[in-house]
Image (tube, rainbow, N blue to C red):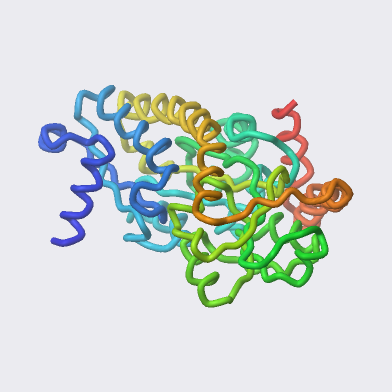
Length: 337
């Protein structure tokens, strides 16, 4: 009863009105690992829910289970495949064993804004795209909407003064190419999901985190941080809300169209809003006592040079495993140009 009440409250906050809930013909369960009110949910999922509600005149309702209520970030793929959730939040880095190609949009230095990365990633991830055909369809999944976050920075509980100050720091990454990038900078990567970062910092399990500006406050990380970089491009994080193909196929053509069109619009909306939030988020972090550091020009050049090979190495490692890493990387870079 407690969980049902919470889901109803959260569902209402995402724009699903009570009258619509009473009139619905189809109810879809959406699950993610994000804290309630997280900017990804507010700017990607909420517009999607409201759009579907409006376009179906309330016939489709959404029950939202945030904050790992149905399972942890790494569980979202199986939860979606098995129907525990109809639509699940799929973070590529958390599922590198199942979706290794999807982290192509997390390579450092490839794009400078959320919309630039998001729209290139969307061309690969949407039905008919190379990621859909090579990775999602074989897993029985269909992407409804995607998001690539703005370039990540390094936030540390220690003083950051230059590239030498990164060496030896235990750095939280989401895995994959982020881990490779931090290794090249002398850091010791520790893979974990975003919800685990606060406890890891507070306990000293990690010294630093690779994160976007917008995620510092939702996970209450500022009190545990001292300094942060600015102006670097340490990669990104890509996510998608996906539905199982079997669930999608069970829906009427009208509902399928509503979901597909709402997902496209939500994708474009979310990246634009998040790009607009970057400077304000950075100022809030500074106001909370985190000092932003501009690294020496020579160090910035060294960092960029060190990270240039990450994409090639990432692709080559996948190629060696029989996965088309180079093909997918070239496809992504072509979409960015």
